[in-house]
Image 1: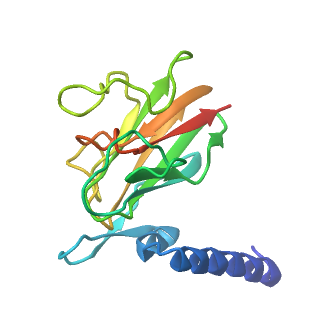
Image 2: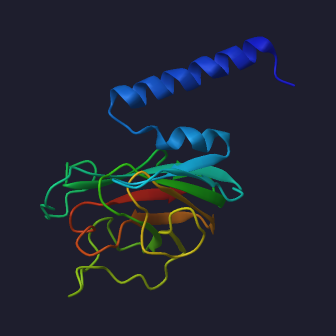
Length: 193
């Protein structure tokens, strides 16, 4: 059982994080995830609570964002200020079970796919096909189905999805593979030790 002072300290930390997110303009959709539910909504749609599937291992929170308006292209990643972004709260995790809680904080539909990076590959540099997407062959999993498991049509604005994967040590790329989004900067690297 947690002592009152430990609970109080934890409560202040959570309140501080929430205040920081609010000041940064983040949505409150992820607050429900702390209690076992998350919100799935979208512009013009009624919000509904969804039960988060059982997580295992370490949890990596991923935020999918866009600036609104047209995509600007150019492959700028989260560090270079591209038109879109995919931001993980951790860049290094231990090998084993990892759950990705993916929340769409943008105004358009997004997804997240996990692909290993080969030794010679660089994050954000995969070849883009004629369909404005990259080849997903070898994907280990994806979060692309609001309030449901498995592949779907994307995570709606304000919605979340969860995917749990067993990861071996190495480098991985997390990215959105909807047409044109990879080129617009929706990718990041994850190191598994």
